[in-house]
Length: 411
Ligand code: MLT
Image (cartoon, rainbow, N blue to C red; front, side, top):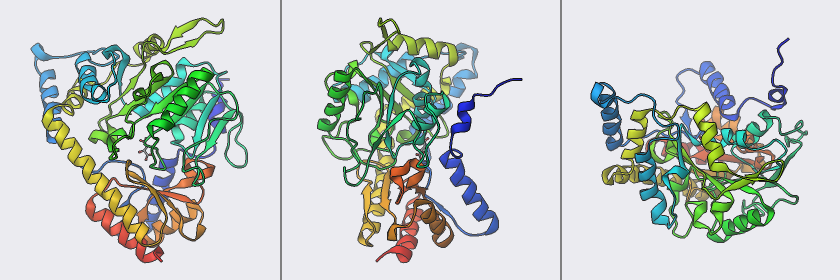
């Protein structure tokens, strides 16, 4: 009899966002005609920048002519896209990368999951709590954990609580770990790490011979000066960190799919015999075998983000979402709801009014205000009693949602 991967059965519930979708569908099926405002999953709502659309069209036109046709591209992505990313996103930060250290992919969700392929199961993993569920669930899927306890903590994972008491900045793990997931600006809390804080993590990783998996998917939403956009702004990070970035939120590519992973040449880990191996070449081997690259028109579209006009258009859309974030944060804050984040990230992390449980608040917000958000406990046990609202939405919807929430829950 064929055996399944039993680890999948250890997963507690369905993946968070489909579960939210299921509850919303059952509400809308039972209440047709009710106008739901969706500020749950962080999915963009504004159209692609016109420069990006033009480049996308042009990419397809290239495929229509024998002379400009492109078949398989490099599995690592086209060098011209990596070069533009380098010029526009890393050089201005003072970060020097080779294009061969930048791997273009179909998104940072996939990369942050697939990266586990190149690490031994014996590695101890540390993740924040609350956290983007992909880091936790993929470690369960590959078999790195035991069962979950009654709180939802999996045996074998080291959880780093991020709470109001520690300003949502986790303490260093209390035991030796090998892989540390960090996400800044943070999903779900919307908080950021200062240079000093990131330096602390880099120093910790170097000292403890650990590797940081740094998810910078929301770096484009940083509005305050001095907040690092890349872990490589910190000295020594190239020796201990992999960075993931995404075009999804930055340039509205959630449905287009494009992201990137940076693995510096000097980053190594050891074999069972203690021999050092470069992770760049391992990931290159993994991608060449399991991935055929991002489609040519998508990479053309992504490259257009870095043209002067494309960049300005993308920044304008980001500013639009960040104005939504400000309105939510201030609107709810003025009504007496405690809010975090939303200054350097498109997420507002709020304390549920009257200490209502996260899922109860979700259900009440849906049924009484017809607004969808994401229950904090869906991101981990320390998210209980919190709730995440996304700033991705039309201004009109965001203002209407604030009105509905504050009328119902404001003090
Ligand atoms: C979120 O809402 O946390 C994100 O949209 C999920 C994702 O990017 O995969």
